Amino acid sequence: MYITQETVRHIAKLSALELSDEEVKKAQQQIGEIINYMDILSKVDTTDVEPTLHIHNAINAFSEDIILEALPVEKIKAMAPEFQDGYFKVPKFINN
Image (spheres, rainbow, N blue to C red):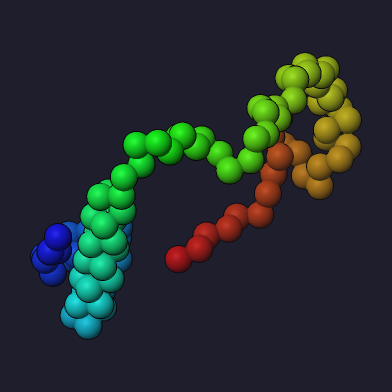
């Protein structure tokens, strides 16, 4: 399957990426190779292959949800460097 440079540029725009013309050409080639490989894999006969959900035979390992009593506000206030109007007060941080 052939992928156009316009398609690569569109994908880059959707991904908020700025690509040079050289990067677009390289991505076009790499994405094309991936699509071609997927096409080869799709032709493999998997008729007698059992579907695999996971490589391990692990059973659901989730723990039980345990509801604990919340800490008293006074104890939380004692642990916070600054607490104002019921909220943690933190330094202003702006990243440009």
